[in-house]
Amino acid sequence: MEDHNQGLVPSRFTINIVTSQERRDVAAIKDLFNDYATWLGSLGIDLAFQSYAVELSSLPGKYAEENGGCLLLARSTNTERVPLGCVALRPFEAPEVAEMKRLWVAPQARSLSLGRELVSAILSKAKELKYKEVRLDTLPFMGKAQSMYRKFGFTECAPYYDTPIPETVFLSCRMLENEEFENK
Image (cartoon, rainbow, N blue to C red; front, top):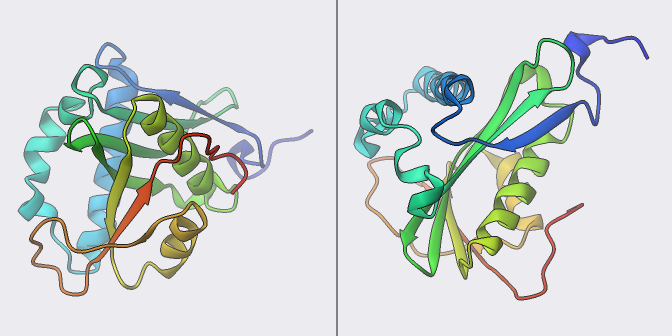
């Protein structure tokens, strides 16, 4: 099959756990996080209230496996191994509750169902880490993302932190003992 659109066709990506020893992958995650922050900034949203600069400079930091977290990176499977997307998990109210953060899919990969694959993978990792609940926050204009989250069992919950961004949507997903997160 001939590669088009940078070789990005369905099933043409891999998702891997990133550890602090994988400098190339940590750098790719930083770039994807910055793309996400830049996109939000273009909409007038500044992540400074979340201590974003500190988070970025200390990666994997609170997302490190030894801290009960996880960073996932998706790359294309072509020879360039282009970083396509990421998602992070960190303990929130350990050992029971984790928070999913920074789900981002590069524009050229948005037709690949990669966001869904990343959410499935991070929820599976949360279950493996024995979390009983995963929370996240999203913004009211992110309707497609909210719809996807709901398909994975997320429901609205009370705000779990103070945010200066009006109408932030808070969601929670309870981990069920025998639940699989594939093909949602």
